[in-house]
Image 1 (tube, rainbow, N blue to C red):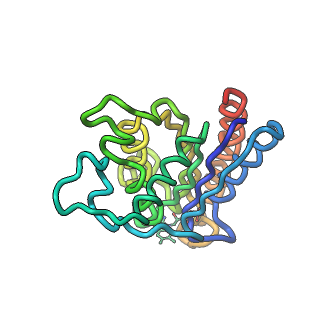
Image 2: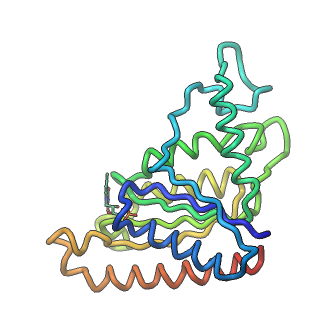
Length: 216
Ligand SMILES: Cc1cc2nc3c(=O)[nH]c(=O)nc-3n(C[C@H](O)[C@H](O)[C@H](O)COP(=O)(O)O)c2cc1C
Protein backbone atom coordinates (compact mmCIF):
# COMPACT_ATOMS: atom_id res chain seq x y z
CA UNK A 1 0.00 0.00 0.00
CA UNK A 2 1.95 3.07 -1.16
CA UNK A 3 1.42 5.76 1.45
CA UNK A 4 1.81 9.52 1.12
CA UNK A 5 2.32 11.79 4.11
CA UNK A 6 0.71 15.12 3.16
CA UNK A 7 1.84 18.03 5.33
CA UNK A 8 0.68 21.65 5.15
CA UNK A 9 1.76 24.68 7.14
CA UNK A 10 0.16 27.70 5.45
CA UNK A 11 -1.95 29.84 7.78
CA UNK A 12 -4.17 30.65 4.79
CA UNK A 13 -6.87 27.99 4.62
CA UNK A 14 -8.79 29.61 1.73
CA UNK A 15 -6.48 30.80 -1.05
CA UNK A 16 -3.13 29.23 -0.17
CA UNK A 17 -0.98 28.36 -3.16
CA UNK A 18 1.07 25.76 -1.30
CA UNK A 19 -2.10 24.07 -0.06
CA UNK A 20 -3.49 23.99 -3.61
CA UNK A 21 -0.26 22.43 -4.89
CA UNK A 22 0.15 19.83 -2.13
CA UNK A 23 -3.56 19.07 -2.60
CA UNK A 24 -2.96 18.50 -6.31
CA UNK A 25 -0.08 16.19 -5.43
CA UNK A 26 -2.31 14.18 -3.07
CA UNK A 27 -5.18 14.07 -5.58
CA UNK A 28 -2.81 12.83 -8.32
CA UNK A 29 -1.39 10.25 -5.89
CA UNK A 30 -4.87 8.95 -5.04
CA UNK A 31 -5.65 8.81 -8.76
CA UNK A 32 -2.94 6.16 -9.18
CA UNK A 33 -5.16 3.58 -7.54
CA UNK A 34 -7.23 2.71 -4.50
CA UNK A 35 -4.16 1.24 -2.85
CA UNK A 36 -2.49 4.71 -2.83
CA UNK A 37 -3.34 6.07 0.61
CA UNK A 38 -2.78 9.51 2.12
CA UNK A 39 -2.08 10.46 5.73
CA UNK A 40 -2.68 14.12 6.48
CA UNK A 41 -0.94 16.42 8.94
CA UNK A 42 -2.04 20.04 9.00
CA UNK A 43 0.47 21.94 11.11
CA UNK A 44 -1.59 25.12 11.02
CA UNK A 45 -4.97 23.68 11.96
CA UNK A 46 -3.40 21.42 14.56
CA UNK A 47 -0.15 23.11 15.58
CA UNK A 48 2.47 21.22 17.52
CA UNK A 49 3.70 22.68 20.80
CA UNK A 50 7.23 24.10 20.71
CA UNK A 51 9.82 21.70 22.07
CA UNK A 52 9.26 21.44 25.81
CA UNK A 53 12.76 20.18 26.58
CA UNK A 54 16.07 20.32 24.71
CA UNK A 55 16.53 16.62 25.54
CA UNK A 56 14.06 15.86 22.73
CA UNK A 57 16.83 16.68 20.25
CA UNK A 58 18.74 13.57 21.40
CA UNK A 59 17.97 9.88 21.66
CA UNK A 60 17.28 9.02 25.30
CA UNK A 61 20.71 7.36 25.70
CA UNK A 62 22.45 10.59 24.64
CA UNK A 63 20.69 12.88 27.09
CA UNK A 64 22.60 14.54 29.93
CA UNK A 65 21.52 15.18 33.50
CA UNK A 66 18.64 17.61 33.70
CA UNK A 67 17.26 16.81 30.24
CA UNK A 68 13.98 15.18 31.11
CA UNK A 69 11.27 15.52 28.49
CA UNK A 70 7.83 14.61 29.79
CA UNK A 71 6.15 11.43 28.64
CA UNK A 72 3.54 13.26 26.54
CA UNK A 73 6.22 15.09 24.54
CA UNK A 74 8.14 11.87 23.98
CA UNK A 75 4.97 10.14 22.83
CA UNK A 76 4.21 12.94 20.38
CA UNK A 77 7.77 12.83 19.04
CA UNK A 78 7.58 9.06 18.54
CA UNK A 79 4.25 9.46 16.73
CA UNK A 80 5.65 12.12 14.36
CA UNK A 81 8.73 10.05 13.57
CA UNK A 82 6.62 6.92 13.02
CA UNK A 83 4.43 8.87 10.60
CA UNK A 84 7.43 9.70 8.42
CA UNK A 85 8.77 6.16 8.75
CA UNK A 86 5.46 4.71 7.54
CA UNK A 87 5.30 6.99 4.49
CA UNK A 88 6.73 6.02 1.13
CA UNK A 89 6.72 9.66 0.03
CA UNK A 90 6.30 12.94 1.92
CA UNK A 91 4.96 16.20 0.46
CA UNK A 92 5.35 19.40 2.47
CA UNK A 93 3.74 22.78 1.84
CA UNK A 94 6.32 25.38 2.82
CA UNK A 95 5.23 29.00 2.35
CA UNK A 96 7.79 31.77 2.82
CA UNK A 97 7.08 33.70 6.00
CA UNK A 98 9.48 36.60 6.62
CA UNK A 99 12.12 35.07 4.38
CA UNK A 100 11.94 31.87 6.40
CA UNK A 101 9.64 28.93 7.12
CA UNK A 102 6.44 29.09 9.17
CA UNK A 103 7.08 28.43 12.87
CA UNK A 104 4.54 25.60 12.71
CA UNK A 105 6.71 23.77 10.18
CA UNK A 106 9.88 24.55 12.12
CA UNK A 107 8.31 22.97 15.22
CA UNK A 108 7.70 19.76 13.24
CA UNK A 109 11.33 19.76 12.06
CA UNK A 110 12.52 20.19 15.66
CA UNK A 111 10.59 17.05 16.66
CA UNK A 112 11.70 14.75 13.88
CA UNK A 113 15.40 15.69 13.56
CA UNK A 114 16.82 13.70 16.47
CA UNK A 115 20.47 12.85 17.01
CA UNK A 116 20.94 9.12 17.49
CA UNK A 117 17.40 8.33 16.29
CA UNK A 118 16.80 9.82 12.83
CA UNK A 119 20.34 11.15 12.37
CA UNK A 120 23.45 9.01 12.90
CA UNK A 121 25.45 10.02 15.95
CA UNK A 122 26.97 7.17 17.96
CA UNK A 123 25.29 4.74 15.51
CA UNK A 124 25.10 4.42 11.72
CA UNK A 125 21.26 4.38 11.52
CA UNK A 126 19.64 6.78 9.09
CA UNK A 127 16.08 5.48 8.85
CA UNK A 128 14.77 8.09 6.39
CA UNK A 129 17.70 7.87 3.95
CA UNK A 130 16.54 7.79 0.35
CA UNK A 131 12.89 8.45 1.17
CA UNK A 132 11.49 10.98 -1.33
CA UNK A 133 10.26 14.30 0.06
CA UNK A 134 8.74 17.02 -2.12
CA UNK A 135 9.02 20.55 -0.74
CA UNK A 136 6.35 22.82 -2.21
CA UNK A 137 7.58 26.36 -1.76
CA UNK A 138 5.28 29.37 -2.26
CA UNK A 139 6.58 32.90 -1.99
CA UNK A 140 5.05 36.31 -2.60
CA UNK A 141 7.95 38.00 -4.37
CA UNK A 142 10.56 36.76 -6.82
CA UNK A 143 13.91 35.38 -5.70
CA UNK A 144 15.09 34.37 -9.15
CA UNK A 145 18.73 34.79 -10.19
CA UNK A 146 19.52 38.40 -11.00
CA UNK A 147 16.68 39.84 -8.90
CA UNK A 148 17.31 41.83 -5.69
CA UNK A 149 15.81 38.90 -3.75
CA UNK A 150 18.36 36.38 -5.05
CA UNK A 151 19.97 34.50 -2.15
CA UNK A 152 17.53 35.73 0.49
CA UNK A 153 15.12 32.76 0.45
CA UNK A 154 15.76 31.12 3.81
CA UNK A 155 12.72 28.84 3.54
CA UNK A 156 13.94 26.11 1.22
CA UNK A 157 17.61 26.04 2.22
CA UNK A 158 17.10 24.94 5.86
CA UNK A 159 14.61 22.29 4.71
CA UNK A 160 17.12 20.96 2.18
CA UNK A 161 19.80 20.98 4.88
CA UNK A 162 17.76 19.11 7.50
CA UNK A 163 15.78 16.74 5.29
CA UNK A 164 18.35 16.17 2.55
CA UNK A 165 21.85 16.65 3.95
CA UNK A 166 21.20 15.53 7.52
CA UNK A 167 18.38 12.96 7.28
CA UNK A 168 19.49 11.81 3.82
CA UNK A 169 16.05 12.06 2.24
CA UNK A 170 15.74 12.47 -1.53
CA UNK A 171 14.58 16.08 -1.76
CA UNK A 172 12.66 17.57 -4.69
CA UNK A 173 11.72 21.25 -4.65
CA UNK A 174 8.78 22.79 -6.50
CA UNK A 175 8.42 26.57 -6.31
CA UNK A 176 5.55 28.91 -7.15
CA UNK A 177 6.63 32.51 -6.79
CA UNK A 178 5.21 35.99 -7.18
CA UNK A 179 2.02 34.75 -5.56
CA UNK A 180 1.31 38.31 -4.36
CA UNK A 181 1.28 39.74 -7.90
CA UNK A 182 -2.51 40.01 -7.87
CA UNK A 183 -2.57 41.56 -4.39
CA UNK A 184 0.28 44.08 -4.22
CA UNK A 185 0.22 46.85 -6.84
CA UNK A 186 4.03 47.11 -7.25
CA UNK A 187 4.12 43.44 -8.29
CA UNK A 188 1.18 43.72 -10.73
CA UNK A 189 3.46 44.10 -13.80
CA UNK A 190 4.85 40.65 -12.97
CA UNK A 191 1.43 38.95 -13.10
CA UNK A 192 2.33 37.08 -16.30
CA UNK A 193 5.47 35.68 -14.69
CA UNK A 194 3.43 34.68 -11.63
CA UNK A 195 0.99 32.75 -13.81
CA UNK A 196 3.81 30.95 -15.58
CA UNK A 197 5.43 30.05 -12.26
CA UNK A 198 2.14 28.63 -10.94
CA UNK A 199 1.48 26.59 -14.10
CA UNK A 200 5.02 25.20 -14.09
CA UNK A 201 4.63 24.27 -10.41
CA UNK A 202 1.34 22.48 -11.12
CA UNK A 203 2.96 20.54 -13.93
CA UNK A 204 5.94 19.57 -11.73
CA UNK A 205 3.68 18.47 -8.89
CA UNK A 206 1.60 16.24 -11.17
CA UNK A 207 4.70 14.73 -12.79
CA UNK A 208 6.39 14.06 -9.44
CA UNK A 209 3.26 12.50 -7.92
CA UNK A 210 2.95 10.11 -10.86
CA UNK A 211 6.67 9.30 -10.95
CA UNK A 212 7.09 8.78 -7.19
CA UNK A 213 3.70 7.16 -6.76
CA UNK A 214 4.33 4.64 -9.53
CA UNK A 215 7.66 3.67 -7.99
CA UNK A 216 6.39 3.38 -4.41
C1 LIG B 1 3.35 36.09 7.83
C2 LIG B 1 3.70 36.25 6.38
C3 LIG B 1 4.99 36.59 6.04
C4 LIG B 1 5.36 36.70 4.69
N1 LIG B 1 6.65 36.99 4.38
C5 LIG B 1 7.04 37.01 3.07
C6 LIG B 1 8.40 37.26 2.70
O1 LIG B 1 9.28 37.43 3.53
N2 LIG B 1 8.70 37.25 1.39
C7 LIG B 1 7.78 37.02 0.42
O2 LIG B 1 8.13 37.00 -0.76
N3 LIG B 1 6.48 36.78 0.72
C8 LIG B 1 6.10 36.78 2.02
N4 LIG B 1 4.79 36.50 2.35
C9 LIG B 1 3.86 36.15 1.27
C10 LIG B 1 3.75 34.64 1.16
O3 LIG B 1 5.00 34.04 0.96
C11 LIG B 1 2.83 34.30 -0.01
O4 LIG B 1 1.56 34.84 0.24
C12 LIG B 1 2.73 32.79 -0.21
O5 LIG B 1 1.87 32.56 -1.30
C13 LIG B 1 2.23 32.11 1.05
O6 LIG B 1 1.97 30.75 0.81
P1 LIG B 1 0.47 30.21 0.71
O7 LIG B 1 -0.12 30.87 -0.51
O8 LIG B 1 0.61 28.76 0.58
O9 LIG B 1 -0.25 30.63 1.95
C14 LIG B 1 4.39 36.46 3.67
C15 LIG B 1 3.08 36.11 4.04
C16 LIG B 1 2.73 36.01 5.37
C17 LIG B 1 1.32 35.63 5.73
